[in-house]
Image 1 (cartoon, rainbow, N blue to C red):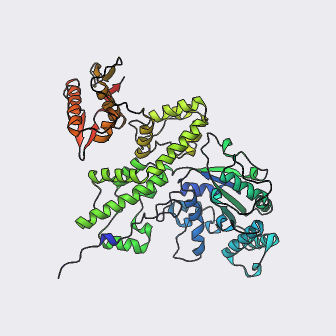
Image 2: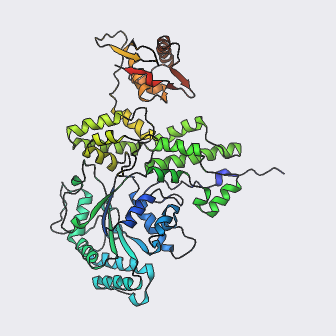
Image 3: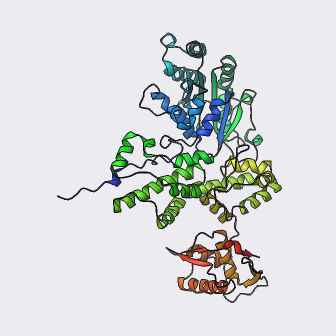
Length: 537
């Protein structure tokens, strides 16, 4: 009788819910620091803003969804995260409640205000189900409910969360909120909430009940400052303070990647260990993922999902949960880059828009900042001098657009290699096609500085300059196609490319004491060794 092999393919991918608008992966949200900041804050009226795919809706759902089973012992909650244990010693987290009001469900109502009030009553009542506060209606009923909850649970605090304002499209129209060409969908929705009386009522409740809070979640616009985010603001909306949701912190990212099988539930953990698995990602794999993805939630989730998927395929072939090889990592990066191309394109489009609204000084500083990405690693931090010199406007853009995480008095890490390389590629000049026999008065020079050796200047052809420029920008890996387009402006015959690259390698070797500077890698890839010795003029 044949021996049954472990069925790795049947094991669900624990990172399968990679859409940051849908769910949080495992028992580690990556938002420990942000949750703590909200909990300990004395602010009751908060506008939570964030760039696309930064994980704003994910955080809202994580805070809210588990409340449905909060009183059961089998449901995981944000309160159970280990890193909140210290906070639990000071605050009764069981008395902190976050409930989401689905604005989309209110879009087709005939009476927006009354439907909103009744939805708040029904949602809040579910938390404690107080019999003497049942079947309440209208604003008086909402006040009575909050008053009863305060009397029964004096230490509790309740936050109503309104998410995805930009997707709120009510059918009703108010005479002074007619859609205008200068209003975004989000600004129009805020105007409707304001003129319907909803914002006014929420502010009144904030004044009346110390245990009541509101979190208004909006998508941040590509603007160079926080002031530019809000143009049409009412006096009531001015009562809110703004918090920008950024990337994960460095430590929260490390915790997220170090999740153990048990963090994905007892059933999944048991199935994983029965197949022979021990740790999901080894320490070296965790470090590699963090180097590639940095701390951006969307890229991080995508890379984790694909890494697990690739390892799963590998395990199905070898019947062993192995550490990812270098070849697997190369294929993984190519796969992830293809999957997140729409996100990267949107990211670049937003950067272009925000820079078009910025000062010339900020544009110059941005280009300089991108240049500093070259040959940097995510483990490195930006010096206080460079960060301070970037200027207030650029500092806001970098953090608001999700390039990096900035917290006062905390180290600031460079973005991950995927985002760094993409931005560097987009900012490099478009290659000029090389024509055989063409002459130019422009001279290209390469300076070679070997350790403890005098400098040497080596003249390059236009083709050689194009090849060296790309190799210096991406010394870790360049494909044949990328190198062809950088030098010739198009894909050419491989034999022609190989011959020209061989000549360049030979020239470099002769002028660098026989050091092989351009090396071949598996799969038609090339890398540049000792890039720090070379400088293009």
